[in-house]
Image: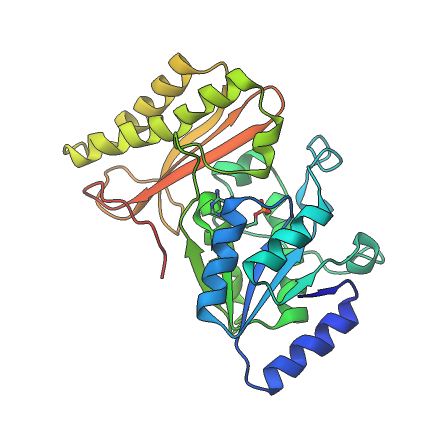
Length: 290
Ligand code: AMP
């Protein structure tokens, strides 16, 4: 595995692969790898000649009171996991290289962001699309892999790719979970033991609500209330949001008659956790975007 830190070196390397008609699959990450990241890399490996992964904790996507400084980092461990998983090029740019000066252009999401995390974290997705535009230009991948755990992020990347004609195929990879159902997250290390036990209720609450849809419920308010009740009664966390929206448009629905995302975010003392389920009008899970 090659480790590349300079933008110019990365561009030269990726251009050479393009000229050799090697297909590049790209996985963008903020590091502190877990099974979720690994499943993205493995899928990229199985569908491309070259896997490029990046590690970059992007300051632009953190709000002033968020955990940019505290975000967990362990580069040496990440390098060894990437190597074992078959990553060919690991790109680890520095903040000063990615943002050497104040940018003259500001990218701003208009749609798909006034809900869910976009509403709770103003500017977050503007930071995401800015860094991804840079990474897509530097790497020029054929395919890019994102986790369905961040369902709104996939909807946003889908808009970025379509609105700006990036010739890149977007692939959503199913959420990797712990045995009890807790979605794997770099931020789980910040949970206390009791919170970790409680945190499974995000998934359990979402699933119990989905079961109501399987049983014929079509009213989104009842579905949302079921999730809220389960989380409130079984955790010490504070609910940021529970929402049910069309997917990937992320519009409100009055009746469940199409593909929807049921998503939640919950604040625990030292970590804000998110989770979601994507399902159709009869509650059948959709685990994989194409
Ligand atoms: P992050 O390093 O948190 O920015 O995540 C990098 C990529 O890994 C994103 O596409 C995430 O959606 C994805 N990811 C994070 N957690 C999981 C998970 N539990 N299952 C699948 N993908 C995940």
